[in-house]
Image 1 (tube, rainbow, N blue to C red):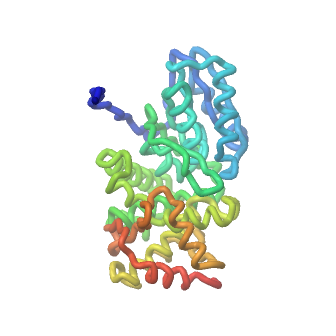
Image 2 (image 1 turned 180 degrees about the vertical axis):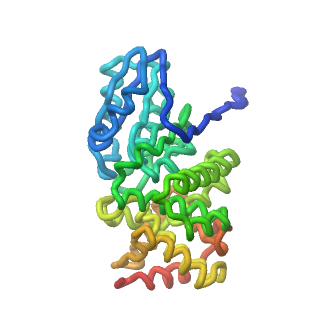
Image 3 (image 1 turned 90 degrees about the vertical axis):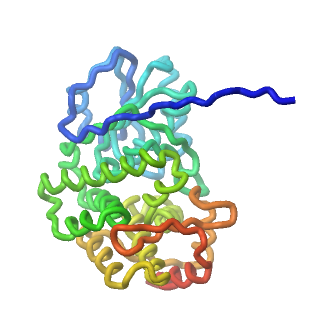
Length: 349
């Protein structure tokens, strides 16, 4: 005996990404700005001058990837319950990728889902993390293994926030920009090889290209069933590095930079990328003082950690490998010995 439940419908999750000076934002509901101590100290006043709501609250959490966990989510949810937020209320993610991921995840589970908007304050979050609806937290098993695909109602990218960004944070964002270029746009990569990103117009152009690339991919594959996985170039290796170093030694973009170098080495071994192209990518990463090497202590343990990555199947590891510069392959058939051979190149570095 079967009782069917007909739930087929089309849900429009479309939204705009505004790249400009932050406009005046007005909300006729309860709003909570979720931020961290560092961003609040630097930029909260700027935001408060531009936002109005029926009731406005600020939830401040600790700064750092190590706080991207269930304990912080519980803290955010408790504040929402104490202020009697309901399903018409809204959250504002005001910070970098960690804040965006946690705020989006809290929004997705509070009373089974409330709206949120993204106001990213780091280059990495502006060009990548704030776009596409990936939300989540880390746990002992790895990065972002708990979470949801949950789209914001809007994203507001204001270059004003980058004026206080430390050099390392800026470089971490550039790593994600380079990722977009290597995987999807050779001309954009060539632009980056020659562009001075300290120039505001060049930087805005780089942000626009990156956001447009990600928006195009997400619009075709929101839930990462195929094409969107290509945006994880560098991340399969990088997530293991972050997990092994306790999320403290490297910024996310720095781990991705090392991961790209590892992925390139694998692509060279498979004949998909020339040594000269791999060197060009590494040279560009180094131009922004990004790390490009990592000392793997235990090659076998590093390999086994791939299986904890949410992008891998039950018995297959999914690798994102570039085909030269400007194209990419998603592979789950790469022989273990090839991967181990590449990992061995990083042992003792």
